[in-house]
Image (cartoon, rainbow, N blue to C red):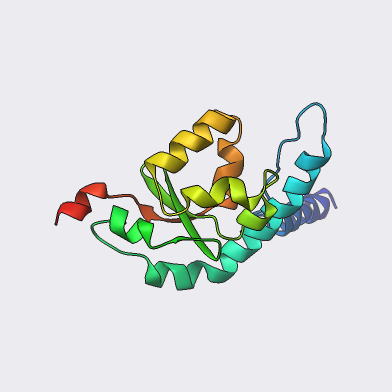
Length: 149
């Protein structure tokens, strides 16, 4: 009987873990602000979008030499916004209309790397890096040296 209960308990743990696999907790600061609560929903939506379009993006992104400055600059619109951050390139198109500071705050930096990173750091410091990593879709390594080839 104890063996059966042990097996059932283990099965329950495995099923529970499987159901919650991939769900990331979004920390809410001590104030529990409405903005933070709305970001939880946005992060969840962006994770679903990332999963849905990931295969398509993997086909369209440059390979081997990475994403050059010229490649990055092509993605500079509200409907196609890529940015460089810490030598990586991210698609933040789906995040633009959801950004609490408005899409207009980010739009001038679409298609840039150094400019975006400087503006992001000036505005947020390190406080929003983990949120950025959750809402942005990784596209590839940034390779400005590829521009010289």
